[in-house]
Structure formats: structure tokens, C-alpha cells
Image (cartoon, rainbow, N blue to C red):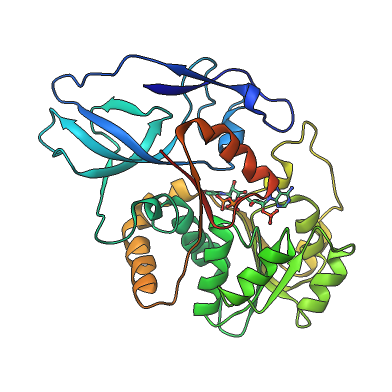
Length: 330
Ligand code: NDP
């Protein structure tokens, strides 16, 4: 079977040389274990953080060991009475074609509810992040203006649609004209801004939001956050969900100081980690599921085919190669 090891730590943008594909003997499940066959593997921007040798909210990857991320797998053998052969599960698993597990941390997923890959996206951690981040910190109200960056991505595309469900005017920021068109046509965003072709983001946001910004869902940080901050309203709420524009920086650049703006406008700016909200996952997934069923929430996926392509798919996140959730089909 194939396995992908973490070979060395990237300086700056990751490259395929940071990974090593090896082959190993087939694993055999011991008593109490299941044998899992990977079907879909999630690649996520936060994995970049785990490639750094520094303390964070999650352990760094160890060199010469397999990487891991969320995986949807099929139980192909079971010596564990909680799992039947033929069932599907999701969980934090290794980048291996086949692996054994004692079953802890695995959630059963039901093919009847949605295509299996959706459990890595809209019905998985990125859907939960979008919904819970927006609700718990953003408190969007009808008639308010919501800006979201990374708007064509997995989290951002769901945030924007939930904003519309809540009655907000929604502005999305994304990296290409195609993505901007797509979020307007497919997902009902009111306005889209291509940050790559826009010289003055502060001005572009001001034009897109004549009444100012009430809620900003930030997936990218950096200069785009600086530009949004110049346009916030009194009592605006900012959800610091991600900062992908900075993940590959070796030295984080300093921008304009935000404190004056935050004080003057009594802005709430708060970091959000989806893992702190496990107790709300059940109700959130139910809500996301019903919106999908009612046709109010759509989702995209970029599916890269082949286990060997995992590193490329991951690197592609930093090049804007995906629309919606990036997953690898094994
Ligand atoms: P996405 O599907 O949004 O993929 C990443 C996207 O980021 C790319 O498609 C690209 O789109 C954009 N991007 C890449 N580089 C830059 C850059 N330099 N400046 C601006 N945009 C860039 O990923 P996810 O939806 O999975 O994650 C979105 C964010 O949410 C990430 O920052 C991630 O770390 C964070 N996150 C946080 C969680 C939490 O609990 N706090 C949980 C899950 C995700 P484009 O073409 O528009 O540039």
C-alpha cells in the first residue's frame, strides 16, 4: 500500500519535495481493530501550520511519519463489534491507502444523506466552521452587510450563503474573475471583488459597501483584513477564522495598526477555532443538512484524483486552484 510521509519542513511555500511517497505491506487489523480503506482525503490550509516545528493548538507533524487529515474511509474488515464491514466512517486518519484503527474518534457517515465527499466539506469541518463561526461571533442580522474573504473556497462559499439566508447583503472577495462570477451566479452573493485585479482594496470595499461593513468573516488576513478594517461600522464584528495569506510567510509583515479603528467603532474582533465547539456540531450539521435539502445551501468541490496527488492538491490551496472544498479521491 502507498503512504505519504512528511519529509522536511518547508521554508515559505510548500513543495512536493516536502513529501515522500513510499510503499508498505498491507496492515492487518488486530483484535478490536478495523481495517479502513481511504476513499476521500481532505487537504486543508491549516495543515501548513502543522508543518512548522512550533507549539500551536494542534501537534506539529513529525518528520518521516505519515501526514494526517480528515478522511472518509470504508470499513473493509472489522474485529470491532461497533463497526460492520461495508460501513463508512470519517475521522482524523493517516495519509495511507489502508490503515487499522481501534475505532476511537471515528464517526459513521451515511451515504444516503449526501455524497461521501461532502462529509469532508459542507457536512464536515468546513461547513461547521462557516456556520458556527458566523453565528457565534458574527451574529448577522437582517439588512446588515457581511463581507467574506476566501469567498469561493470551502468555508467562504458557505459563509456567504448563510449570510444570504440570514437576510444580509453579502460581498465576497476571491482571486479570479471566474470565481467572482461563480459566487454571484451560483451562491447569490450580491457583489464580488477580485483582489488580484483590484489596486485599491480599501476603495473597492467602500464602493461595494456604501453603508459600511457590519460583519467580516476573515479567511485570509493580511492586506485584505487591513482594507476591510478601514470600512467597518460601529459595533462591527470580525471573525478571525483564517489567515492563509500569511501561512507561507517566513516573517509576518506588519500592516496599519488596527487599534484606533477598533476602539473608535467598538468593534468586536475574535479568533475562532471550530474545534472548541464540538458540543454544537450535532445541531449545526442538522441545520446545514436541512438547508441543503431545502435547496437554500449549495456546495462545490474540487476533486483531484489519485492518492499520489495529495501533495499537489494541498499545495494548490495556496495557488487558488480550488473552488469549494478541495478533496482527493483515492
Ligand atoms: P479554501 O477552500 O478557502 O482554500 C484556500 C483558498 O484561499 C484558495 O482557494 C485561494 O482562493 C485562497 N488564497 C490562497 N492564498 C491566498 C492569499 N495569499 N490571499 C488571499 N487568498 C488566498 O480553504 P478552507 O475553506 O478550507 O479554509 C479557509 C480558511 O479558513 C483558511 O484560512 C483556513 O486555515 C481557515 N480555517 C479555519 C478553521 C478554524 O477552526 N479556525 C477551520 C477550517 C478552516 P483565491 O483564488 O480566492 O485566492
